Length: 176
Image 1 (cartoon, helix red, strand yellow):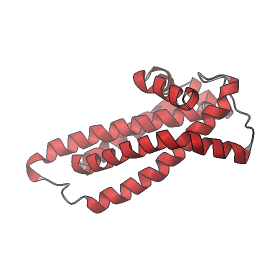
Image 2 (cartoon, rainbow, N blue to C red):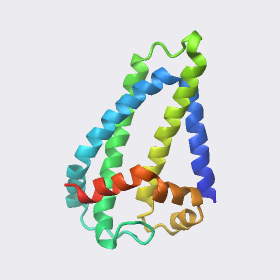
Image 3 (cartoon, rainbow, N blue to C red):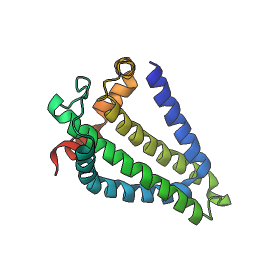
């Protein structure tokens, strides 16, 4: 239940932040994030292979996830590499967008600018939560596993997010 509350708070604050920043800055960030997502999509597997060679065999818990025990190490390393690339890329995009942004306050369309920015940021937060949860369910951390099992919101995000769930499993497990 606590995990559900945390997720909902993150989503609410995500909308609030996007609302305050506005559409223009959110569009700059979103375009940059999409570019970073595509780059991470193609570079995650090679990076995961390198990480795997560096750290060796992992012992992970696959009982709470849709992946098997044999796949959990590969899934985790691919997810970790993907998340690391996203984190670095998002930081770079954030810095560039703030440097370029000069027209966030357009008096005539301020309300539309704010609402649209809030919705876009809410969507971005949802995707980030989805990725984090998919990685965390593999870790053998009993406290998190108990929180996950008690959180209908977290379980719904991991198991019921329509297109994204299927795509992430395909990206991180089947494609080479």
